[in-house]
Image (cartoon, rainbow, N blue to C red; front, side):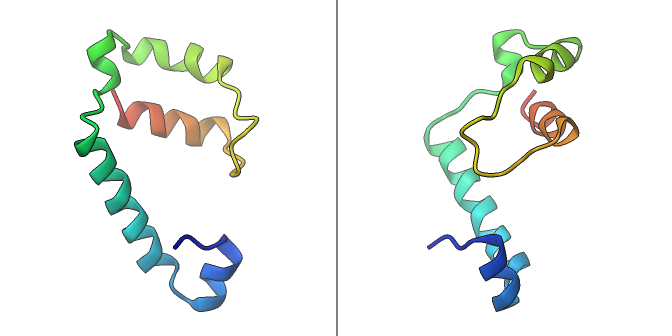
Length: 76
């Protein structure tokens, strides 16, 4: 069960719940055999243009460009 950030903070279990979420995401990546972006010839010099064109209109969490950059770099 996923909780809102406010519920996690109120329950004092932010770190624990984030660890569970990370484990779930890693399991999905492995089970779905998701390739890293480098497999599709995306290189570090492509990151800035990707970030500039990225729109997260449907994302429930507001991410700043630096957050998006970290995510993309971690998937290279």
